[in-house]
Length: 252
Image 1: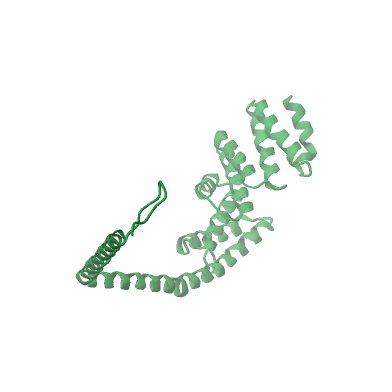
Image 2: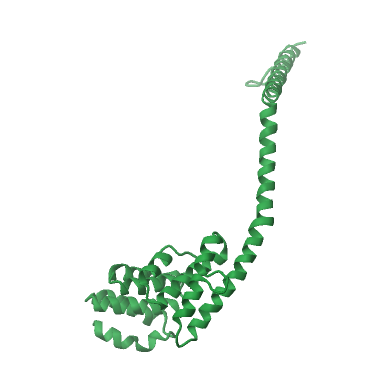
């Protein structure tokens, strides 16, 4: 019996269904053949390079254990030893700051005394520890007090710290050292960098003020005015702001 379809409709019969089923089965077979082939290739690859793969895994495992062992048995004890040595060097540094004749204490802090390490020893023997980084800062400050400005520049020009206050002070001290050796360009650049590291009410206006005074002494009134107005507008409660109107008047 004939089947009637509406105009534009599709005809379906058992023959078409059989063809579609055969196509699906054929496609499925091809997929599984492809998977089997890929699996065989993988097995062959693993078989061929088995020793290399095992060696690679073993090496990675060994590296992990070496790293953990280094941290546990070498780095951590090294950090603790560095802290102990740093405390002694800082003790001499603090004595120097409170002494009427500080030079000997500063030298003890730098070079060590009584069989204990100084800042230079800590830098050399405890490299890549937090104590070593602090020792770099402290040795720079010590040389500043001893007026050995070339050494201040040597140790502080590349100083970096996650402590923004230390970073700001180090960059400002570097500016002081450059100024003392007559390098006004780098002094001004260091003061500006020091003022930008952290916008607190201590270091930022302090080094903006120094930058302004230096610019004024160089006859760069517009630049000096920029620094002074920055203090007036952004750090009105700072110590430097108390005198800023006088400095602004000199530049206008």
